[in-house]
Image (tube, rainbow, N blue to C red; front, top):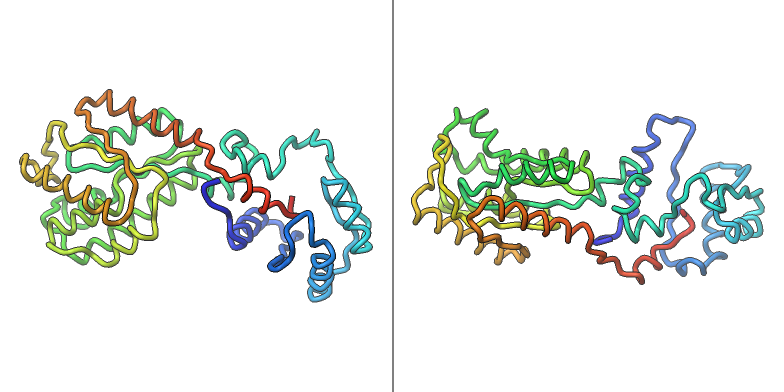
Amino acid sequence: MTKQPTVEDRWRWLLQTFKYQDNIKIHDLSEDGIPPYPDGWDEWAIRAKKLLADNHIQANAIYSSEPKDAIRYQELLGVNTVVIDAERSFMNISATQIRQEPFRYWDYIPTEVKPFFVRKVAILGGESSGKSTLVNKLANTFNTTSAWEYGRDYVFSHLGGNEKALQFSDYDKISLGHAQYIDFAVKYANKVAFIDTDYVTTQAFCMTYEGREHPFVQAMIETQRFDLVILLENNTPWVNDGLRHLGSKAKRKEFQDLLEKLLTENGIPYVAITSGNYEERYLESIQLVEQLLNDKKENSDEISRDENRSE
């Protein structure tokens, strides 16, 4: 896992998963300050008893798939403990396995949890650099979702189809709309979601047309990061589709240089694809994405520390 879920993440997943089942109630037992599992049983039991008492809960049974834990539950809480599927014959998976290789065990991850593991790949580049076509092809290749460039939709729906009508006040709205597109793509993605353009590009357009950076867009750059950023060289044929105004060789280079500058200034790692051949770009992108999905960056120490009784 490239990041660890917070308590709030897990809380949200459970609430969402069981929100239509009124007979299931979710309670949060804080384990802060307790020695990590498998130690700390006595301290944990004290807090568990207090949680039950505070919520006026009389426990009738405890269910666990770990026989060794079941013994401790019964000893410390004095509640009948039922061991279920200890051999994993019905559900042949453990939380540890999922944390170690989430994509291998993708089908075992609940729907509400999958977006947490989805890798976001942003494709950047100037006008007519082939971003949209490449995003579409990659999404089809990996059988997953994509987020289109919201700015283009915004220009059509709010500005009559002409980018020259853009104003400084439009760029925060474009960023918010793009964030919604990304959230939707991630929610329904199959392991990876492809994003056409990012907030750095939006900022670059703002600086190009307005002569200054937008503070809201900058905040989005700093808080909304991607797992892989691919920057396409602006060396493909320029096509005037009615929305593009940076077609000269000088303007294309100037915009490309600005993108690279902003990426560097914001500490965003990226991979530059310099080939002007569309097929070569496509094949190189596939290799980069496959490497991202197969790269096991999990830290075994972090995984072991994250072991807890919720398994």
